[in-house]
Image (cartoon, rainbow, N blue to C red; front, side, top):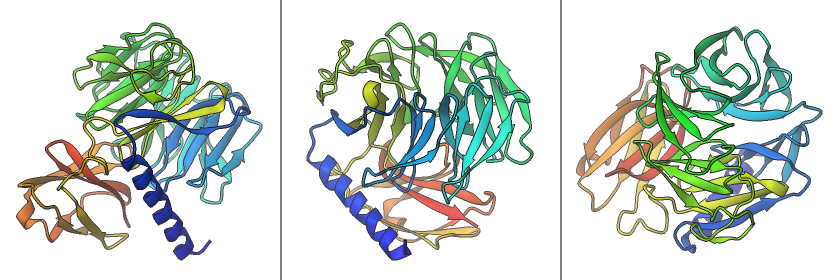
Length: 383
């Protein structure tokens, strides 16, 4: 596929979502995709619009493209579960029963990265602070490990202190980690030195699914509670979506029904969730609180350009954001860790020269915010 065709398809995908979500009511639940032959577990929404689906029941990993074409990449697997993305944008997935981690290459082949040697029921992967390792949740021995992307070695990071059957791990708003237990409804905040703190609890009892952060909140499905909880930065939780009665009812989040929701992912734009559930369904929820979306920008209409692509030490930004006094510009790792931040006056925003020579090579997010509202999120690459 030529670069022009690929670029055009991405523009069509962006235009479709912008139009589609602009005409929705706030926080509506709908059905994005369904295929009853899939036993869906985790999913990851990539920056280019592709979605990686881990098919636990079928022993497969699939890629769902922006046109909703399903491409099967890996087959014959034994209980694939979670996934993660490295600093160059490559997708990795775990195989629970064989204690293995695999990497999917750009040509859809996949390679074994690590097996055993400290992995014990691995599930989720989160890219580390310097992009040289993954945090990996070990379900069986109740630990979080570090998997080196340099030599595939595995060392223990933390465990115990309530961590019991961990599956999900994500980046917290303050740069710490959030770890969630599958077999009860507890979440923990883990400092980067391994210190574990209680963070919050899903209001429903029973098995808890994966976790994602979007805007100012954390979102957590409950398989047995047939609902999705939302937690604030202090860990206070409420049932946010679903009635608690199993079903497949679309509509406003308060009256919608889910059946055993488990995997959850956030869109590259940060305003939409995808949720996997029983019978191979993927549901979407859009217009999330705390995230600027196309339908509520009002007179804040951003024009943002980042160049060159890829860049080396200096990233240039050309911005036009009317009617706001200040802007926050932030560089984040692919996994969501804040790496650099500057606040500027919008009158000075027309041309910014950002020195990012301290960052290693790889992919990053550039996020533009105004008063905690995300105006734009763009992917950039440093060479």
